[in-house]
Length: 265
Image (tube, rainbow, N blue to C red; front, side, top):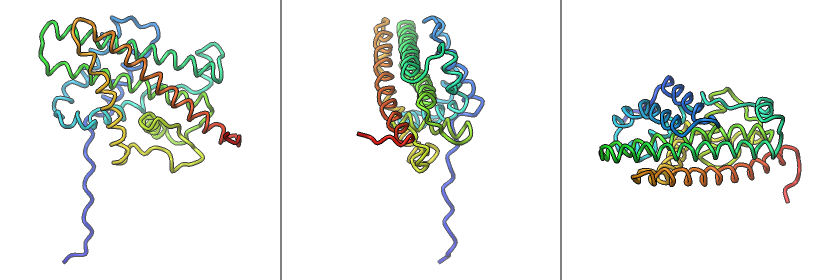
């Protein structure tokens, strides 16, 4: 019997390339524009569907259902999201700092994700009315889920900056850590490096995939025809982003307090 070690299983190849991730991040940057009209948001979601569509269909239903396709695309896009530092954030928000700045960031993110939900529902409703090909409808939900998750990951990264929680590492390392923070709903504690989410590992990818699928399921209401889905999509996304922001801010206050040596009551 050979004592040679059993070779490790090869890591599965990602479904999306870095170039595709960069393109997704660029679309998300435009979707996160506070002044974007509903029609323009719908246009950007259609552009995103062109990036996502063919790859998603080739991956198959099981890969989408497991959350792996959604998680892979978010991880490819995350390093290219325009996550701003504290100085830039304060400058962009007329000198706001602290809780007031966090309030402004959350308000803008809610407006963006609600707008994506409204535009995504309108696109899905239009497709349903024009040609009821059910295979195309879930793609709209996939696209909306990815867009909303990317906006929220950007929010998570910027809330860390507002609360003075500096995350070490390269831009890619920090972005993937923020994706893990989004999935766990917990702030990153730089004083405890072992708590930094490892979303590149099997367990981390599974958690990220489960979180993406949970959001996907909530967004299924956007496929309801005749524009009712637009209303549902806007409300669901706004509520979910509000919940995420509350959980993240509560935990980041704790991390920031521990960093300053303030005892928790």
